[in-house]
Amino acid sequence: MTTTDTETILEFPAGIPGLPGTTSFVLESMSETPSEEGVFELLRATDDSVSLIVTQPWTFFPAYAPDLADDDLAEIGIERPEDVAIFCSVTLDQAEGCVYVNLLGPFVVNVATRVGRQFVLADTDWPLRARVDISQGAGTS
Image (cartoon, rainbow, N blue to C red; front, side, top):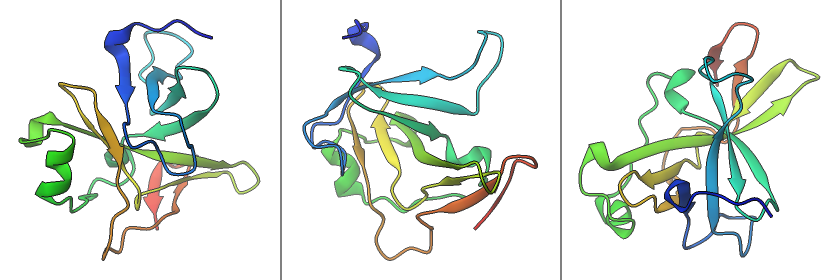
């Protein structure tokens, strides 16, 4: 098991769908060197049982604006927009030379408390698999 600074741990008290019993994660850079700013990060379980590749959705989809209910945000202690960090899971398709970003199920984290939740957006047109051509870096859905 990897030791992790408790100040960098993100807690998902309700878990993440499909990952039962896993509630503590860290967000790690996937960059080769500290000077590189990576587009993709690794959301890794603190017990090393699972990892997900994630990205900030605005990197590829500048107009992304998930509609999150105030009551849902209050569940993780978010009261102001500056309390929010949002990232989305990524799936790589090497055969097609692209990645898919899950815009339908963003991870929302309270930056002050590091408590988060994965939301599944209802009544929205945001896709589960928004295609990104890696060679061009532009999003299409």
